[in-house]
Length: 155
Image (cartoon, rainbow, N blue to C red; front, top):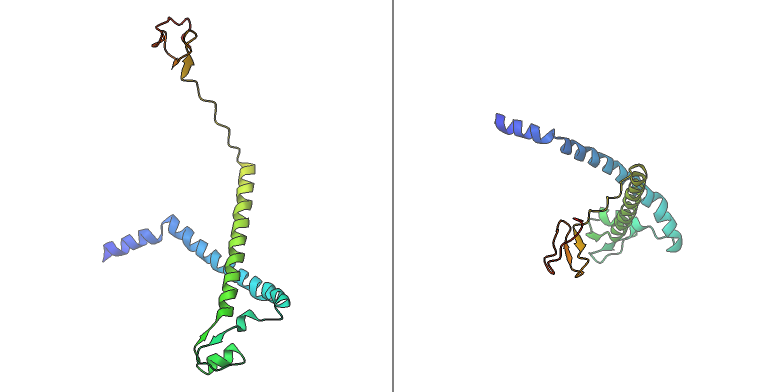
């Protein structure tokens, strides 16, 4: 039992695990901000173009009875498909993906502005051309292996 507790403690207190926990907490807070943005700002705006449709109140009752609101259907115990809630979640996802994309793009732009990566130096040539037969040979060759000419310079 002591070994199990020790292994669990090592796992839980690793740096990556703590980073993941912090990321999840920030992600949950970010999710509530995006949900508020969608529900309080975007859905009312979309309602202007869709005839004041409230996405959160869009549902399909599976018992065949028509209910005035989702709350009334749920109070009656009817099984409902909440497609309006699904649409809101799809909008949330698209907005969240867009915001994450913009943040990553911004961070990459800032990072590339601060971090100068030097261009790689040109590689030293490893071959040369024989001046007699025009064959490509090793740069270290002193005699051409094709035409057997003596080469004046080692490069």
